[in-house]
Image 1 (tube, rainbow, N blue to C red):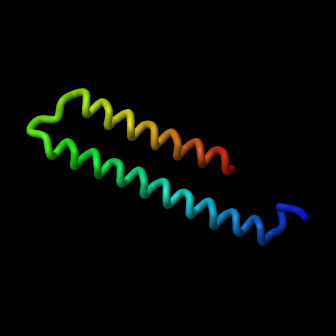
Image 2: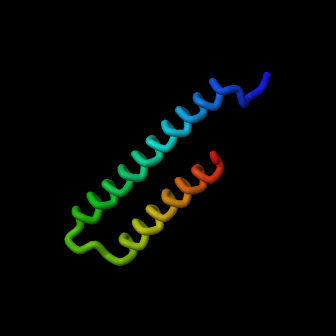
Length: 71
C-alpha cells in the first residue's frame, strides 16, 4: 500500500491546513493573553515584556518548524 496515492496526498493537505490553523489560533490566543496581562498592570515591567517576546518567538519558531517538516 503506497502512501503517495492521490487521495492520501489530498488528505495530507487537509491535515496540514488544519494544523496550521490550529497553531495560528494558539499563537493569536497567547498574544491576546499577553496583552491582557500587560494591560491589567499599572506599568508593565521589562521582565514581563521580555517573557512575552520569548513566548511569541517560541511559538513562531514552532510554527516554522512544523511548516518545514511538512514540506
